[in-house]
Image (tube, rainbow, N blue to C red; front, side, top):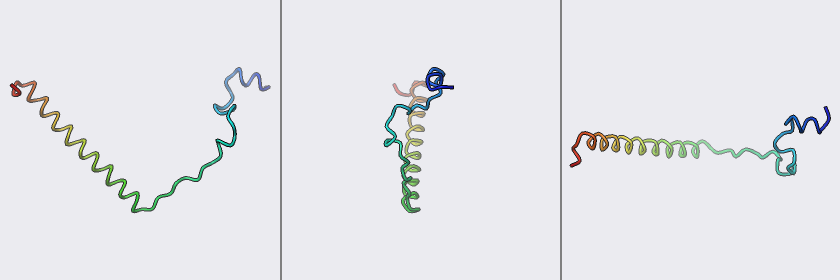
Length: 70
């Protein structure tokens, strides 16, 4: 298959027109255990906060639907 046939059959990769310098492999960022644990704790706290807000909103909706908000 020649290049034209490959192009017409959408067989080129998405970056075939791009400059190859932009696609050099980057070294993955490595974090130490303490940083990862701190980030995990932040995520856990956010999830707990969202869960508490969700519970509170569910109670408000229930009170509203049952007519307690008057």
